[in-house]
Image (tube, rainbow, N blue to C red; front, side, top):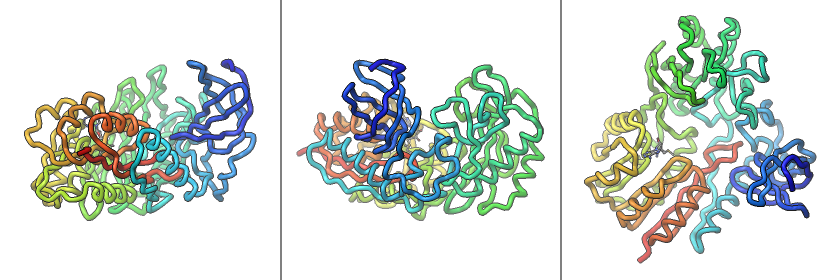
Length: 452
Ligand SMILES: C[S@@+](CC[C@H](N)C(=O)[O-])C[C@H]1O[C@@H](n2cnc3c(N)ncnc32)[C@H](O)[C@@H]1O
């Protein structure tokens, strides 16, 4: 097989997150963004170490699993969801099998508890980062998600299913406002233009909405009329803050050099398992609040008895897990790299009447050497890349009897499980929680215990 050659075949094996494998007499081709059983025409776009990777040119026959009625109108062009055409029950089976296959590949015996569904399939997200751009080169202004497989083109997602309709009304208003004024978007290669992103966060339980328009400093616009238009919208929830973030960085990320408050406040509240959390625009908070309750309940069950125990919550974000455990523990110590999230965690603990939580700002890799407490139990909830190898060895050195690992990427989890098992731990139980219906992502909770 050579780069540029075109082949046709059917996806057999299907690996996390959406990697289809086509087996042909000439060799194997790995295809991203595929679905199990699809018949595809693909072009080889990479050949490395004898392995061929293909790009989909055409779907010749759909997957037999694609029976969901009435998918989202943006399905296919929007890069956000890949499983929209598959009924939810089938999506869950795919994710469950992928995680089990990955864990089976590194663990000999453990108790697999299957997958728990998200309490809601549509409108589940509490946060969206929309990008400004155009649908095609020099086309009209677009605001929404990147087109599937495209770094530049943006699809205006006014009918997105995985968010509450409030997101769509806000998106439409902001897009039309700037369209009417002929305002340009920031062009990533030339570094010219004003509009970058629109960040919308909406709590599911409280209905509070925080809107943040992210621009460069290349224009000095009065945003009062936009603020007034947004406040007049008839929404299911309530806007508590409208912000303007200035970001001149060259990287295409939602980031703040300075944030001005145009209306209200620069935070909102969400509730989980009876606790209240204050969330700032850029701090991590699970994007599916109802799914997060299932995830944290599962985590709490895996953590088990904590009376008189000191618990470490490493990679603690706004301190959600720490505060769910604190009422039944002696002390909980959270470590988180984003100092804004640590401030919010401290404030949240106070708000929830918890005085046995300590939150420390810093990199787990470094902070771990300076911690005064000795943990009886450790909870790990690292970012997608998993735990830094040196940090993992330091965590192992604490020698705790039980570890609970919450993972948003099962391939990083399995890499870390290999190291944990080589260093005296055994995997007891694994449970998946689906926090991301219609997409290929899945959360996994894993309980490990120290071998006697
Ligand atoms: C998956 S989130 C978990 C947050 C929290 N447990 C929750 O459920 O809301 C991972 C968190 O790790 C933080 N993080 C990333 N790298 C880190 C590091 N090296 N040290 C400490 N925290 C880190 C991120 O900022 C993020 O808040």
